[in-house]
Image 1 (cartoon, rainbow, N blue to C red):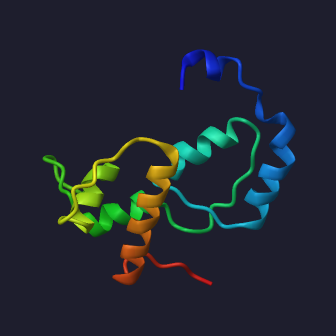
Image 2: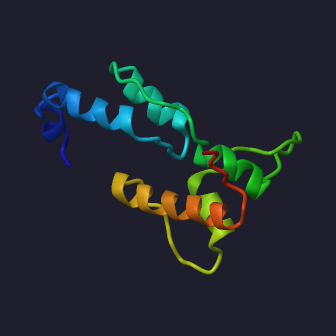
Image 3: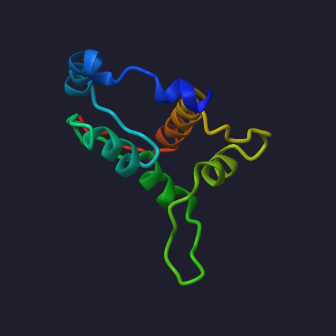
Length: 119
């Protein structure tokens, strides 16, 4: 994308109701919900926070220690490399690619019993 394409793009107002309906109907998560959800909430959306943040669970699952002690929030690539060490994947920082790989990490943690969703 070029800067001009973004600068001249229409805003979300015409989709606001449809997007909010999705947020109202489904439980959502992300890799760093604080950032992603904060971005949407700063634009007037309301998001349920009823399932765990993928990064927060990965923090406990990966156990990457800070030099000062305690565990750090792993970057997406760090967590991926721990969960899937035999792949050559490199994070693209593109929305769809990130979402697919973060969902794969969530599912891997779920299979291991580390990511729990309460009914």
